[in-house]
Picture 1 (cartoon, rainbow, N blue to C red):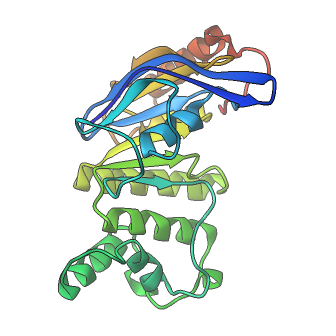
Picture 2 (picture 1 turned 30 degrees about the vertical axis):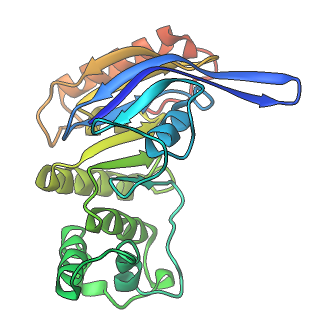
Length: 256
């Protein structure tokens, strides 16, 4: 579904050049959840923006479902850390926002919105406004909006980082439940090792200065995963060790 091949990227500011990505290559199969794990500044968000069509590569190529990525499309939706809801619109109207401009029957649009809100457990909160919702519920609205659009790929940039631990765990479980039903391909950016191990089919560890893929590690555990299990902790320890070997040992930004 996603193919990134020999991607290189530099940002130039006057006489200064920052080499952000160096010959980065990876792939994501249809229906996989893959995480880009690395410290801040390693280029993982830049990579995500390239897959989403918001940033262009200097060299190499980014391909989505067999076509070169040149611009954002409705086949590939981005979810950010910031909760992007319109405060003057209700839950229902915020989810409908993603379908505005789509050529479809009203009944089909209503069904998509209703089904998406059922998936995230917000069917009883259709007419509430943002200020009446908890942070976790607000993030669920953004997830519902994304799934109502029925994209092939969802890109997630630290989507749960602003939430407290219990809400973060709850939404991670919600995401896995919905993804299992919808079979959507998901690419996540995080520097949280626990989140990466809990959600991912594969983890791509990134080194930095410039950014590169250091290791591609399959997580061969059944879902949902037992955070207290011995096998789970084996992967956490392994990922931490690989993360340190990647050149990120100084100033680490991992979570245990």
